[in-house]
Image (cartoon, rainbow, N blue to C red; front, side, top):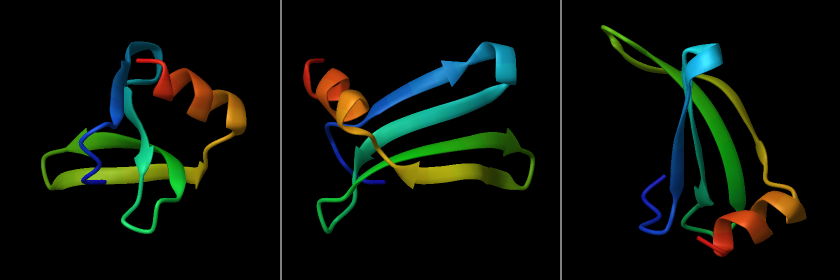
Length: 59
């Protein structure tokens, strides 16, 4: 996601990262990935809920 307004979080308990932002088509997504020596490995991606979008927009 190249959204300049995206929100990235480090999920310490899951040893993963989460990003909330918009695609180039303005769809809101939540993506969770882990970092590995070969690169980022996505483990989950889904449309963002209205609650998550509202919280992300407030930051």
